[in-house]
Image (cartoon, rainbow, N blue to C red; front, side, top):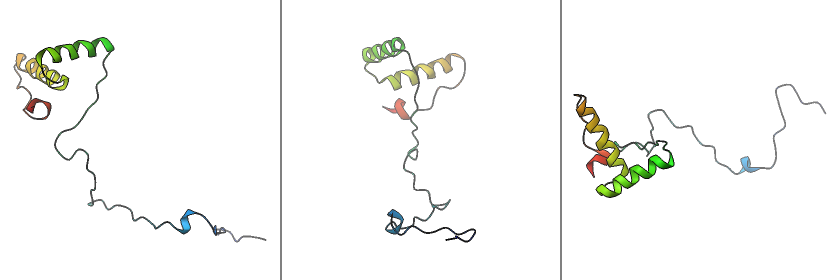
Length: 93
């Protein structure tokens, strides 16, 4: 039995028989939930020793590690004559 060029036999069974086709999302149709609240999460890589020291300092001061790191960065910028970090995110806690 020869199959004509450009045509293949369709499967008579399988999930495609029951699944509904999904329309592609339109460019203006943004259904994302992440990153819409003005706060973006990041990951930094620390050694165990660095993490321990930062965690101990944050615990001593009674603040989160994120707030401690952002406050320290803001102070470093101010020491160089630049504006500090704007309030918000972990600095708003």
